[in-house]
Image (cartoon, rainbow, N blue to C red; front, side, top):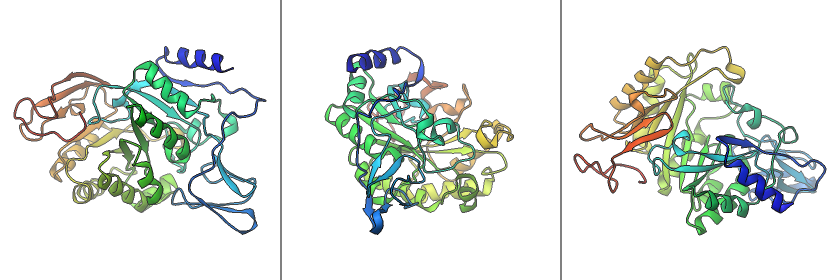
Amino acid sequence: MRRWLARIIGAAFLLAGVLVCLNWSGEKSLFSRECMYYKALAGGQVWCQLCPRKCVVAQGRRGACGIRQNEGGKFFLITYGKPCALGVEPIEKAPFFHFHPGHKRLVVATVGCVLRCRFCQNWNISQAAFEDVRYMEVSPAEVVDAAVKQGVYSICFTFTEPVVFYEYMYDIARLARARGIKTSMVSSGYINPEPLRELLKVVDAVKIDLKGFTEKFYADMAAADLQPVLESIKIVKKSGRWLELVNLVIPGHNDDPKDIELMCRWIKDHVGADVPVHFTRFFPAYRLASVPPTPVKTLEGAYRIAKAAGLRYVYVGNVPGHALENTVCPKCGKTVIERKGYQVSEDKVRDGRCPFCNERLSGLW
């Protein structure tokens, strides 16, 4: 079985993009992992402490994420070692633009999410029941081995919400660090402070989707709250781990220039002008299939607002070939990294500095 598994994993990396893996029905799972953050309650219930929802879960039931289950008064991650997506992609797709640009990442995801975003592009795995999605059984050590074999620079937890498969992510990141492999997380930031701080001890970079800047938007569009996300952003920045932010601009929902200005000023005041901010283009998806794509001029307007607010590294995303995908030195204004879609076509950064004026550029290079 293990030899067969190794051959399948090896073949997967020959494919472009992401592999949706196979499930062997009728076989007992090879992996199990008790959750790290929960409290046992009277009557066999458990109280999850991982995210702001703090679900109280009865025996035999699961939390709101759909993948953390109460079994006999103990809480278990049922997707531990069961990724539904595994493959090799550019780090720019995350997007991370200042985290070792141009390298290849091994992407890992399991089913599940703590949010209910109406615009989710990966709803078929993030909002699906565990039993309805095919997966492969791959231990944390096997994930790291695959990363080494494929020669990728980093492992990235993405596509769904990595917070909900916290223990799997944590164990992979810990093993990866011991073998000199970087790790990153693409997240909504909907996590409690204690588990986030513990995770930041083993993860190198975090990209947080700051989905909007009003409580109403978060409540209506994601069934969540804004404040825990803002707290997570501040914790990541304070930790010293690399941080980038993304705002998916959705026409008629979070594209009010006043709200964008407030968001940009909050970012500058609370985490600094050097945190890269990406304004990305929305395309019709999931429950917002009737909403049109974001006009490029709206994204360009958000860029101008962010620059006027004092942010130094601002990007327009999901518009392949746009000049605002490039990294520009904030001092001399010259282009230091050129991109074409998800590919770096030229990187002129030298020792973390602009080659034209010697300005220190914010990032991990």
